[in-house]
Length: 139
Image (tube, rainbow, N blue to C red; front, side, top):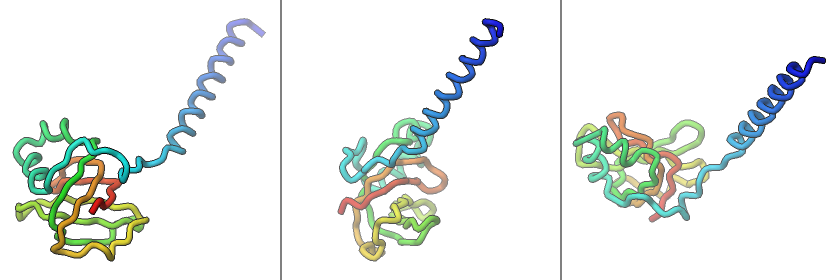
């Protein structure tokens, strides 16, 4: 076999093994335990929604993919996809809410409309509502 063919085959083998290793790493990656993670920001649902409404571009760069602890009054509690629970927090705006998606492990019976709650989660952006994922109830 030619030397260049051997080098090419070794390079393809190395790249393939590296790809498999990276794939396995991401496949086995677990969600952060937000119960123990310190939040990047702590605020009310009213302040969070207002920040996105006033300047969405600045708020996206500031809050998206950050851990936020938000306190607000529960508007509604609904079942979401994949046995997850969506908790909507009031914002003072008739058009927009803060939607927090809780893991399937959480018992939604503890959440009642009209009660105040503190939820910690990862902000994923603003689409008429502020969306937060991987949320846990703090109190």
